[in-house]
Length: 480
Image 1 (spheres, rainbow, N blue to C red):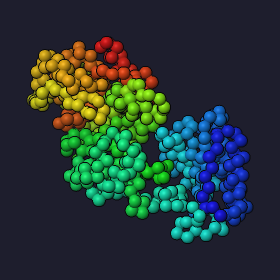
Image 2: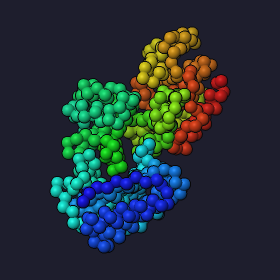
Image 3: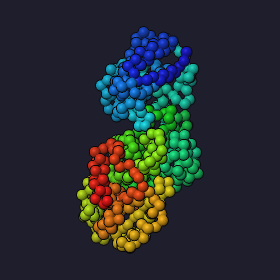
Image 4: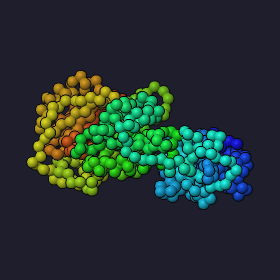
């Protein structure tokens, strides 16, 4: 008989009867005892009803995928839908929704996994004896090499440090997941990845199944005393829904701590809230909102929408300090003192009075471009910037005039009120607080849009993110 069956149905109330018929036939051919057969059919019915009523609210406006798969210990049951998102639950992720609790009383390993753009999956394993021989995990398609049994797959995955020899596998994994649309283009180059791992510039974690790399998560180190960017996180599609991201993230976090990094930060799209929720769950806290950072094509792809891209998208920067309540001597500019103090304390920074002995960082007031995003950055520290004339010259430069968005970072280790007022007079408005940035210092980030960008329909997962957006939009109106 078939060891694995997949069924795609519209999310209508009649779907349960179709699913029950398939489950009944599978149970009969597999030789399940009457009690186990009834349990399988009951679980399938409850899962489909849950999807129709809770995920799609009975509106018959989506699809449901049902997978039944035999393994040596029973039957794995997966239900996948693209309805209302729900938080992770089951096992270590907390209590299941009340509608799924009856299933947990008759089966094991009941998990609800939020897959962001890929919807959500409910996985169940029913322990039951059956008459189908499974040799080396193969019974006419069951537990094939691309998928694996849901009951055992997670236990067979190894989470470890990435080695230089994994470079090609990581690049191929990124290509299979994103083709050539991912922001960090260097990760398509195995030679670059290999050198970055050897040098310690990249601290990568991989998930491996039978020596095959199926997941990746990285910390990109800029300097030992600066916050490192976390990201380039992806899991092979066939292995999604098993909760592998959490142990990968925890492994990477321990490596960052061991390396003595002061903080980590992540960049999450505001086209949807799912990636933001993942970061908030792992202790990241909202610190800056960058309007227009995503090019229109990337913003359109994140929305999973058709049509010609029109507006640039926004990204939320979230930070996580790796030390307990770090003290920072900050010279908060009057215009944004309240917002900066709130964001710094939200990240976990203890703000104290500025240190007059700290010297500005040297550097010209020039914009540096990011060709991938069509954005440019300007960093100014204290009185080294050359005054308003130098700022105007920088704004008239070709790289600044041709860029879609301008960002300016102001050093908070030294007084910077004159800089902030000069930038504000040129149309720059609030973006947020950058913790342990260039030189290990904290910075005020400002922004100036020069191309159409989405600002009214941003999806923000946390209350602090919405609070920041409100203040950004008010400041923008005042600037205009």
